[in-house]
Image 1 (tube, rainbow, N blue to C red):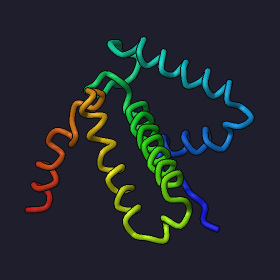
Image 2 (cartoon, rainbow, N blue to C red):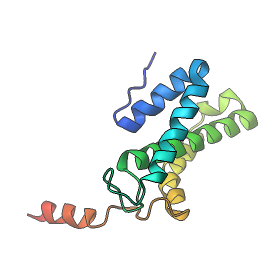
Image 3 (cartoon, helix red, strand yellow):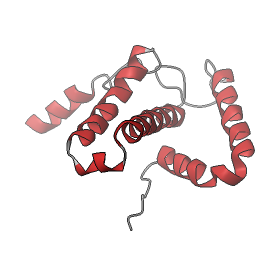
Length: 132
């Protein structure tokens, strides 16, 4: 049996939400709604560090991880409904999951939630370090 171990705060939050959901769905919904309201209310203030889109980096990661989780679940559901369990004996469904991973950032960028697909200057700094 393989256990999934989250490696980021957003991963820990989503792991907690998915494992505690059956018993605490109302409380989790209230907590997430309160967090969203807090992020929107402090979007233009100095309460916490804001990214380029005016939300906190943790909230941005949470939204990205949630979008990825939703798109993966939708892909899995469609494959299960159309082809059943044997579809994962083939190789092509895994290509769809890679496409979902790549399209998460593109989707959030297209709707305007993530202003940049790559951190501004991130590649430039990497190339400078690499050439030294």
